[in-house]
Image (cartoon, rainbow, N blue to C red; front, top):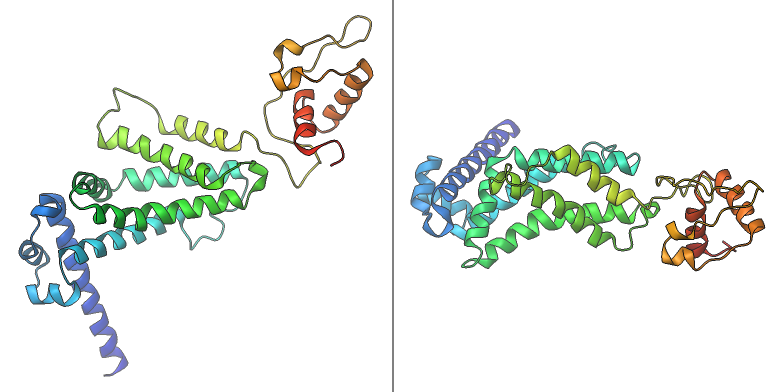
Length: 281
């Protein structure tokens, strides 16, 4: 077969598959998985029943293919693998960009939201369908996010896989409440507010591993005041239990204050650094 003719044939077959999957989506969303029939899928796709079975063995195979196609489409839309810079930059910027991408691409897809409703409704009778969804949609996304957290030790997240579930789970829960359970008025919240606080949560312990030895990004608390005689005033009452157990002389406080200012940290943050790393590090 000439190359041009082969290309035309390939495109024709691809168009048939697209038509079948579009018909399947229409049928599944309208009638659910259990009540959907291959006859109606055939009619919606505008192809023969024989053609459908040439590509898909049965209804479960058709549904699986539909999930895989949708998962691939959404993965490409959310993580944009063609853009090599998508996951590059400061974590605060990258995580905000990723969170917004997840929400935008989930909330704007009525097909995806409808399919999620269907899968949840049918999961009791057809657990394998739910597993197909999790395997193709949730698992790849969680793996990418966990890999990102693992590659950024400066975030000091003790378990990247758990952090990935917290990050993605927060966004999915927001989508379920706002768009699937129609509860915007019951639990109102702006998406930007959620994203900002989620990103702050994930980056709250961030340290600068490329800059000064002790530089960090957390909000700074007021520095310890001195008495009229030049000595530091006791401020143990505002410190955590861990910090209250540390008693330093006035000279040590002065040295600590000097070191903290040099590295743009508070004394409490310097003590935490020493507690984590040891004085010899």
